[in-house]
Length: 134
Image (cartoon, rainbow, N blue to C red):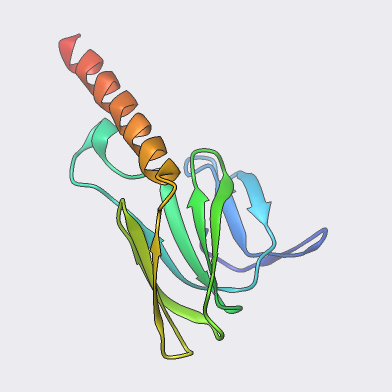
């Protein structure tokens, strides 16, 4: 989410999932400060637009792959010795750049991310087809 961090019961809530319509907080996670973010979007409109995954880079050098639909972290990518400053992802890998002057390529070797996203896309396609038939 955007905006100022708020003090939570265990520290600073740095990553928050909120309902876009109401603004109500759904879940929050205490992390090192977020330094960069990537929300992958796909070509398409309506039910086919967007992705269920987001990626954040943090001041402690970690990157976190978030499953937005489940409101949880899917993978913690630990490799930079200083803050992660740039991050991007596609269906097969993530790439991060850090203040340690390195780039890291994170392959989704277990294919779980790809499989989850393929299932979600198939559901959205079926839903879009059902809507267009009506």
